[in-house]
Length: 169
Image (cartoon, rainbow, N blue to C red; front, side, top):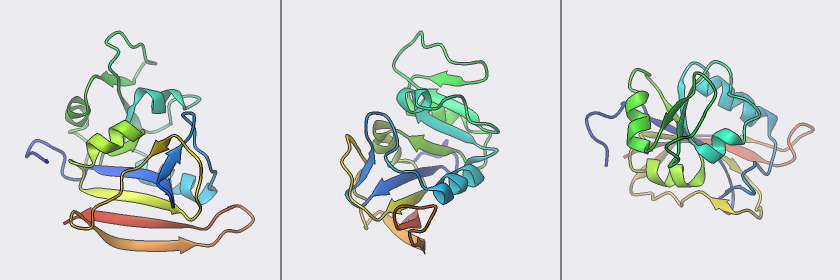
């Protein structure tokens, strides 16, 4: 449940298959150039909150973003400039100065964050995949779809996909 101390524009951003898969073996399953460009455009200049495994899946920290990494490891060593916390609540507090911090994964962090985010920026990949990490099914009583933009597969994109924005009721 949201509290008055939470940022007002806390946003979750995720790419999800038709069968709610978001990853396999700590990696993305698909590569959609337009989705990656959208992720960069939305998150640049903002705090990005993620679990340790998600952070470690990057070759290096993403430019022009403040990285806040959640881990249970109390002695976790991260590169200089990366903020390390031990709970989602602490990550949100560290992002308080940001007008629109983003939760970027992974699966366990998404599950926790669904109770506190105001907006979900979801890329729905219109295909079923095998995976080991899943995104929860969104409740229509809590979430309302406000926009949807469909993209057909093409030379750069192997699958149809849609950008969908959900707002908390």
